[in-house]
Length: 374
Image 1 (cartoon, rainbow, N blue to C red):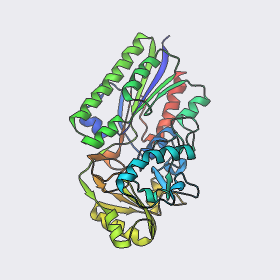
Image 2: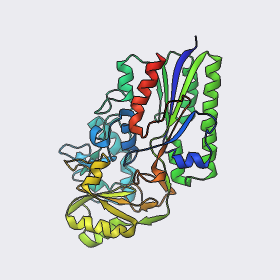
Image 3: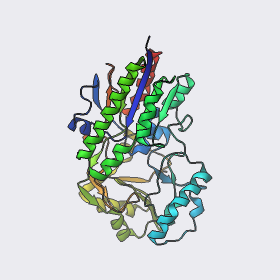
Image 4: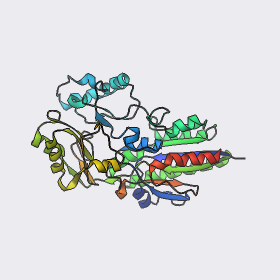
């Protein structure tokens, strides 16, 4: 009897609207459907997909939060403002020291966070959610290890093509699950936009990978079940806004009377209410202040306010520039309201079971699939 194996192919930022525009894998799966996401970036969506828990439940929302005493970057408390060129050269060494000092295993980048403010922040997640014990909630990897399900994981620590080759080779091993995550499409669309020909070419490469896996499975007497999904979508940038400049003009520099973190699509503010008003005014008709009730409904309410006393969200297609994520515009972004059509991810499977409504249902979906396969 053929040995059952489940292939999970997690493609970061492959939105439903993108998959539909390029007619991706239309004839390869029984089930193709949009997949609801959570509010935030991959720092929220990946932990939620792997755990079935909301950001408020697993604790990881934005890449950075306000620091407690003894935060990962506390050693920078006496660093003054320095020229950007010096800051940029120092970031690599700061990152290495902070990772070792605080035991950080999660993915993050310092991007353009000003070094003289960095000690006021900490990473939102220190553990690696792709590894057992890496998140405050049980993940699919914790569950598989607990249940004795053997899995082979390939993700962003190694190159995409190497991961594809390793996944094919793993069909000859004893893994019950082959889990492949790629963020290359996400990075590409940030550069070129969501409907560029290079995006179509990348999707053709993914279709080829799936075809190779199915052919190799037949040759090795493996009964392969494939699930392809994404954590969120992507939206083309149509305009930019500068709430940072508006806030400093109205209230003064960040870090004096208030603290703020400028993500690509939202401003999170602590302290002086005038800064919140200035952020809202700076975005104008390009964004709005989210109420506490809306944050609760979105599963992103944190009573300790570690992610912000107030959250001001840009409308879909609006990019905050400059921000702590970048000083120049990019072609496409995510992190908008999850109800927007272009925020939705996608779900595809070659078994006839209904798709989960959102990524919060993937953990139970996979558990059910594995339960029948054993």
